Image (cartoon, rainbow, N blue to C red):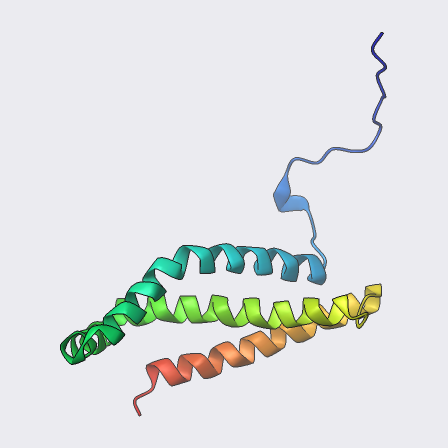
Length: 131
């Protein structure tokens, strides 16, 4: 004997019509940046290896890192790291009981996005502007 339950909840498979709240948007970006960081780990480890091998490889790496496309890739990795770090701190605060309410989640997501944006702009200036 098989029991069946009739589910009367609406089903919406068109993802373009869903309006995601700000905390949900921040959560999805946090997950995506975590996955992107995982994918970027081989690049970061290669850069670390080349920088520590010897003086010649360090100089060659500096030349490589001055290219436009390489700087763009590094900027994307930095942006992902920064957002993931700020969102991770927000999650740690929520684990400590700070910002667990609906209003706190909205405020925390807004602060996460704004603070991450500012830090990403600073990192971009640091990476792109000559020193």
